[in-house]
Length: 353
Image 1: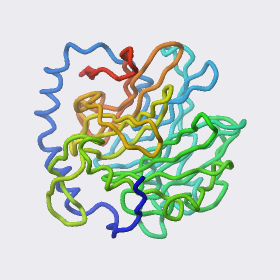
Image 2: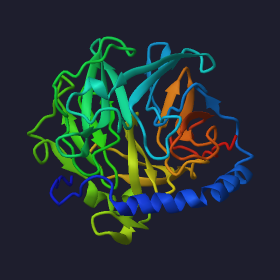
Image 3: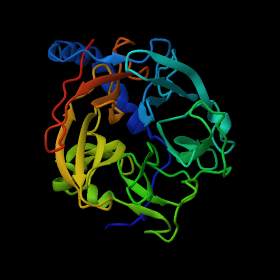
């Protein structure tokens, strides 16, 4: 188990990232048209709503209901303009309840207000709901991981600790949470790096005796191609130049089937595709299993995860189709699929319309 949290981390998003995204957006009309032509054989996907843009879907099943916690891209966004989080639910995958905005940055007094409410995931335990979110830590100008608590998925939500659960640092976004068979809860997160922590029973604090002051750094593990796939040429924001880096990009999604742990994630740099690795221990080593999807149509990012509901398997992700290919106005899409007999995930063709 590699648990080195050391190393310098840069502030915020540097100019190099803005230039990379700008270059991609200039090519987006061509790429979007290509995706439409290429993916016409894919099965039709489901949509939750057309009322609002709802990126970064995080599905969770409670009893007979499937809830989907999402972010919120503003209708006028030309960069990541995300002030709050939304909630949707269904009991049949056809009819959806739209709760609208159920939590905003105002819940977290330590966070930058009105923006940078990024990806999240919620989970139920002992009659309470815990929602782990990425928000900008105003004390340092970098994202950290916050946690909110409620009695019901629709809230009201409150911040039980009044500070970030994981203080802001470079790459500290995209939390995913999982409770193992023995009751131990784990929190993973990361962009161009991957970290995880052992949650205490209260779900709002971490075990600081674990790893390096409570956080295990997986960045060295990510460089192993057998664990996370072929390394790729992409921008290093600390060095300010392109170098060979890990295939893992961001958006981890952790769960377990039988005795196998699954870690899904966005991969390959910009534009991103969806991939996964598996392990027999939460601590690894991991084995790279390949792509789940190619790049998401109309969006240079992809974020979501797979989940089982009422005997069927679904992939949740976001694309930019409803916005006409605007990668900053993304919408949740859902595809039904069938796992292979050994539990592996087949290659899924994402739909272009």
